[in-house]
Length: 254
Length: 269
Image (cartoon, rainbow over all chains, first blue to last red):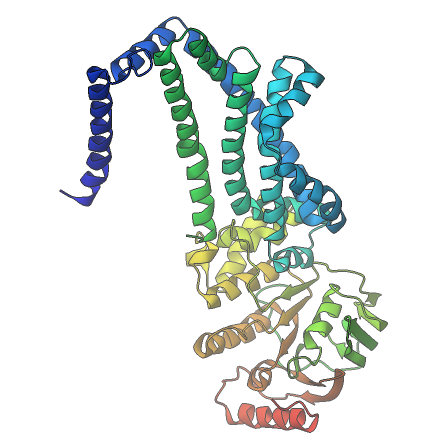
């Protein structure tokens, strides 16, 4: 067996074995089938919510919140990060606030968000934003700091204005640290969004999970969990990891 | 400046025309918590249009400080620095620095790095393309124009930096020990190429180095600086014919003279 074939076949066998074990345990009914459904039941539940449109609706609501919240976090976190990375005074003031608030688990923003915005989309987007904004700001700041001062001076002697130095040196130069920060921020946003949806807000995958609990529908709960894993994983594997790998290759960091 | 300008290799008559760069009674101090270091003390010198001047001195004699002052990256505590008759107030593309470290942009390929200064000036695309082609050719990197920075050797990186500086067609190139971190063979090759580039472009070069032989190969005129505080000890004109080779007897003799000057100034390493 070639190494390449093994890389494909070994995980496949592993997961097939895992599902088979799960199915066998469910068949043996060691635990009640209501609490421990087999993969067939979970798949059936997934099919059901797919066909009645519940899953599509939940996915749409969740992904919209995630994209909006994360995009806002990128803009805000990027701006704060560049400011604190470039200006010492901003770092000593705003930068310490960022560091302090970073230690706050993002779901603790939810009560405040509900008080401010009510049980609305804005509340949940706020929580999603808060989940990642500090991680993004910190990595943007580190990215700006990591740019060799000589690169900025080289731009100056070639005639760059202050604004041109930011535009042509700082922004592209911070990318390696930023790629890592975006990936991390996305994961944080994803977690806080799920927590928020379970706790308060209607629609979305978290809410669907909660519906499954209310109906004592364990297969549905497991099916939605699988979808959450799948969405999180594919965003990382299809978007953020390739982006980070590309940047690192371009910079010659391996 | 222009490529392909035929030039007279004899140094220009001094005193006849106003100097391009003029340093008058410049003092620069650096204060740290404990020490007050005088990097340059009352230094005066002129550089004329088209001249190749080498500034030689041991580490810590303030030669990089001098170059930063000429570039406008730093300001003197006393005295004046003037370029083309006007005081130097900040950096500008008429006085480009070539640093010891390549300072290239890893997110741009070789071509885009050379084009960097031209984009800043918002030159039209055909002009940029022609200039980049010309200077890539001049530093012999046309074949590598699509390469990424991390794929280049140290000598190639310095060639890219040189092309990037030349592309904005500055009146003065300020070179801060640009070959100091390279191996001996690459350094020899680049010294030869720089002589050729200087002859073809006609630009003025101020070249800082601690390598006396390098100064003897490259310069029309060598300025010897002494350390602590940095002062101009002596000016040596170099009337040798070009191109010069590192093993020429005359070059070796001159290097010995410069070395003796340095030793006399207490700067022997």
